[in-house]
Image (cartoon, rainbow, N blue to C red; front, side, top):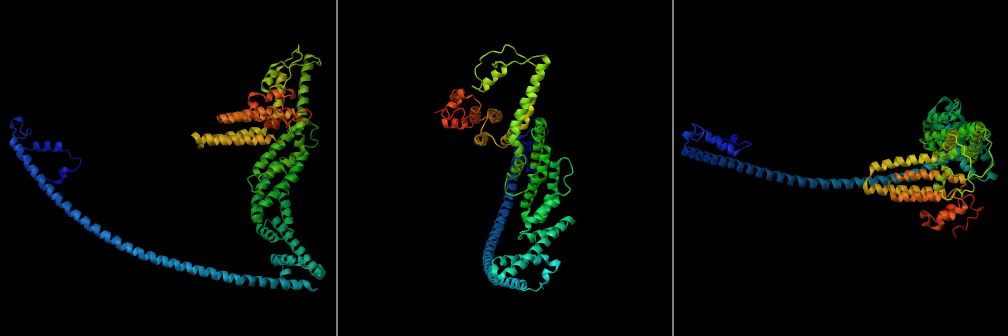
Amino acid sequence: MLSLDEFEEPFDSYEYVERLASTVAGGGSKGGPDTFNPRKLSCAFEKTIQDLRALDEKLQGRINKLEELCIKEQQEHRQKATDLQSTYKVAFGLFQELDDRINYVATKVVHLGDQLEGINAPRSRALEAQELMKYFKEFSSQDELTSKVFSDPDQIHEAANIIQKLSLIAQELPSERFEDVKERIQDRYNQVEGDLISQFKHAHHCGDTDKMKACAETLVPFKGYSQCVDIFIEQCQKGQFLSADVFKDVGLVCENVHSLVKDVFGSNAEIVMGKFVQNLHDGVLQKHVQSKLLNFGFDKEQSLKNLFTLYGKAKETSKQLSEYKMGSDSNFLERLRKNLFNEYLSKYISHELEYLHEKSTLILERYYNKIGHQKRERPFAGTGLLTQELQKRIPGRLAAPTEISKETYLSQDVAVNLLQENKVALKRCEMACSKSCQFIRAQLERIRDALDGKNLESVLTEFGTRIHRLLFEHLQQYTYSYDGGMRAICDINEYRKCMKEFKIPLLISLFETLHQLVNLLVVVPENLRQVCSGDQLAVLDKSVLQQFIQLRADYRTSKLQRLLV
């Protein structure tokens, strides 16, 4: 008898027939080829087919029963779902009704609260006015004050609240009728204010932050609140600047004071922190800078070294202090730093050039003395490699040679020393451009990591054009001597190298043109017209060229006003 087990997966019909034939005597394999009997094999196959049909009918019966059972269960589930849906609709309706009732009650409660507040507010104001009138009456009499609030030290904050309001009222009263009252109120006002400031100072000395906070909050509406802040600033600086590095001490003091400022002054913490930092710059840092740069320029080398060191420390300190919130002015720390060094920076360029000239002259004189050469006055054509290179880079700057020098003195040591002195001088005055280029390159890497394709090209183009516009506008703010123009060319050349890394043709073209425009600041006047007619500048509007020409220090003395007319 066949069973379902024989047809479990995987089922191979070919293998099943072979297996069936092998079990029949005369089927070909059982008994050997000589015993093959097709009739027996046919009978065996017919019998198996009948068994298979019987098994199929049995299975079909079971399938029909299961289908009937599934249909029945499906109908039952459909009925349950219909019943649940009806129940859900009823529950949803009840929920909406309940929600409407809750909203109605809430509206009533809010309305009732508004009514109670409308009644309570005038009542509170009336009670407060009544209390103030009682205290005002005490001040109106010539007798001593009898209210305990003015005599109990533990109630000084309540007394301060009362006297501050009485002071406001007194200011509105005519002096001819209430002069005595106003004086008594003012005297008490000053006394309470002084007591609060004294308590604040004592609490600061004892490290009582809670009491400091209470006194500061009470003093907010008083005129002496600024005095409270000044005392806090003064007390926080006592005994803090003991090392030789004052800038480092300032950073440590601000780090220690910052959390205390937040705890004591609350919502006014940013303003107080800003005033604290400003006081440090105007006081201890100003004195330190003045002591280090005393007789600035007398010893040029040491003065320049000291200025470079101090300015670098000031920038590091500003970077550290920028972590603290000190109001909405984003240039606050930069302005403080500029005020700190403004007196010396205004003279820096002239001192740097004078020192560089003196140092270079000294190096040359030592060399001439060493070789026994006596320097003679003679025209120098500048036909060396340096002059040729300058003529390539600065078209028209060097005039044509008038006489060729017949003697040339070369010294590797002299050249190295001169280059080293220039390198040191440039290091002192060119940090802004270097840091800007570092920042631009860092942003370039970030943008390339985040974008690709057309998005990358669009963002880099926008980024580069904004940098170009910023530099273009920045250059318009100054007047340039020859030396200043050379420094500007060096800076723009660094930006031009930086922009080449963007690999955007438009940006490369913009900065090449900007470099040519800045070149107009150093070209000799008689060659300006020729340079302006060059390939890159000839396509520009004459007003743009004139913008840069008029930035020259010799714009009027060389009569360049009508050069391009």
